[in-house]
Length: 475
Image 1 (cartoon, helix red, strand yellow):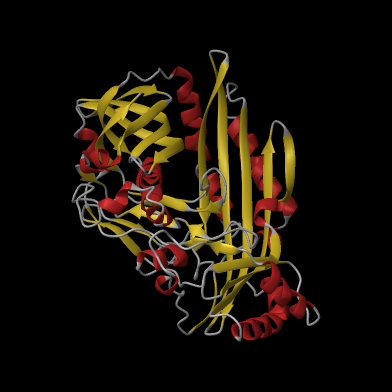
Image 2 (cartoon, rainbow, N blue to C red; image 1 turned 90 degrees about the vertical axis):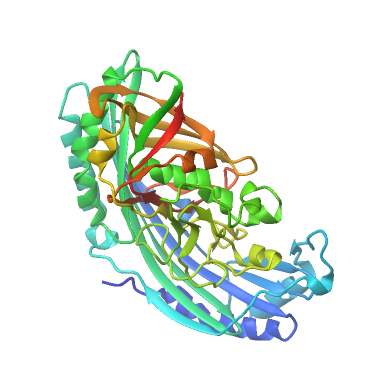
């Protein structure tokens, strides 16, 4: 089934079209993004059962963007009717502050105008079971059963927290030449099994996500056994011995490397500010020839998918690294205009009240031809890395620091059964990516988390890829 259209946005559309038409008589560029979004969360654990609206992903409103021949400005609001249009126009004229001043070295005549080529689109994503049709009680019953089953596996399991969240998204983008509408539904669930260890707690997190509905709960249940089994194994884990090792990374760890090591480093609004080293490496080798990297809301089905971005740019498939060579970065419309490049459909807002930044969508490495078994067999002294927990990047200097929860020891091509936890993965990004010697046929994408820009501006993304083998510094 397809996500239905928003009655709220359909009612506001004629008024927004009238507003855009009137403002276009005075401004060189005018657009409006209208959003109607709603999100709910569900959680079952030792602390109890909770459910409710997720304020971060729930809201209705509009944001205008205008160009006065000198600079761009934005104005957001939450109400529109016939009587409100003159007041909104007056606010734009009297109070709107420039969104951005002229970049250093540019004159007024050189400061461009965002393209507004004609485009019409009406698309909706599909789902099997809408969470609201399934109902709160049924969702909580599934989560309660998952938790009960996981906790009942072993008396050492302190808790098995099960959660689920969904967001229904309706957006309109209108300009003099564009009329775009999209209706989306994403859902994700997670399991966190916890066990005691030396007066502390160890645990294993796993999740499932999709551009879809409550059918995600079935995929989540399928991951329960591995989550509990690994949490129990972590009771006997040992601290990592610092050093550089041959490592095989599961798709989840590959995804963290893709996202942290290279995703943020090629966001081109950082190029404008000279805060990303990648700007100096276009058309140069930055990775093994085995590596091709994509980002795009159009190419995969997960929480980072959409049909157009928040600046009215249709979704893309952007090849960032092509067989080891850095070809281009990701951009929103504003940074692309500054840099003289084409926007890649990565202009995203946390909400209609926030500025658009260059943001990742679905980011991943292409699969290769190797098998996981052959990759492990090739490791003389190293680890199979799994279950990433967090990461930080330094686009200016291309450093990376990521936490990995599970490192399974491999000696002479065999897993020994010993687990080391936690491990800190560090290094210089091109060195790490150039050391990749094997890439598996297996491929997985995960979209359970959120991505912030500067510890704020949260959006949903997905990342992943195949298993990779590389030399990695662990500590």
